[in-house]
Amino acid sequence: MIVLLTYLGLFLGSWSVLRLLSPRKPRPVFGDIAAIRPNRWAQLLSIIAVLAIWGGFTGSRLVPLHVPGPFLGQTGFDYGTNGPDGAAEGRVTIIVHRPEDKPDPLSLPVGKTVFATPAWRSTLIRPTDKDTPGTQIVTVEGLPISPGQSAPVPHGHVVLTPKGALSFTPDPGWQMEPIWLPAPEAVAARFWEIARNGYQNTALWEHLGYSLLRVLAGLVLGALVGIPLGYAMALSGWFRGWFDPIVEFMRPVPPLALIPLIIIWFGIWESGKIVLLFLAALWIMVIAARSGASAVRLSKVHAAYSLGASRMQVLRHILIPNSLPEIFTGLRVALGVCWGTVVAAELVAAEKGAGMMILVASKFQLTDIVVMGIILIGIIGYAIDILMRWAEARLVPWKGRG
Image (cartoon, rainbow, N blue to C red):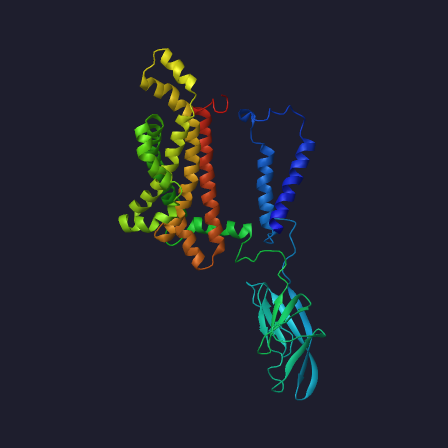
């Protein structure tokens, strides 16, 4: 919630500043899609905002402002006991350090009630271990406490366990623990390391290349089959009636649900993965082509026939050009679905690929590699999407112009 509110605040602040600083221009008419262009400053500020939030909530050295982090240093609290020898008081000293740092035992203060614990972690404290048997802790920082209850202490809180020990948890702050989300520089360092040395005896570019080839193969096959089938369903009542139940039945089925059947039918090797990606893209392309052809204005078709055009000429010069915007939209949607599907397929069984890299890293809690893989997948997918936008702008310049 804090991250969401921070992002919303950055969005509203950036929008307000740009509104004040940008020169006044005539606004496009509401609904004129062709007049809408992405604001380059907004794109830049969006990236900066994401990086600032990421760095601010992970304590990155690249960001000047951070949210409050976990407590680090020396703290302690007083406790009171009650036992056969009567009431007594004592004090516990605790050294809180970063998880990756291990304090030297010789550097700790001398005393039997000195403990060290990593930040973001709880530690069990038994200050009465060597006291008289039967002694129980009854107060913490002057407040009565019983088994199962929690009590606030400086820089944290403690819980009295049923066996009479104290479980101390230091203040975590608002920053993310590295095991949950590493800092940007940690991910960048891991990227350069794997780019030089590879991962699991395979170069990084080979991992990404295998995933990309699988995605493109499934997307191309899905388009080659799905686009003609979509046109046929839009132009023929027989094709529409025959294939509509199949398409509408398979469309809501997530591709991941087909993985067990694909493994049984095609095995765990490349053919199974490509068939799965083909099915992930097929139904999207069928619906895109069908919708694009069905949305062509009938007046254009009648005008072509009145000028003596044949069916093939109507298909080539009227239906296909006017349905291209929908097809490009379907390709972009199918690309995203295929990327999500290939990662899941590689999680099941693969020797190479981005999904395999993420899976192996997650087993060893190497979150920096997991985040690196996610970022690389996003960058590749975004780059392909930009290429599709460029091709769409060149091949379909009339999109949004009626």
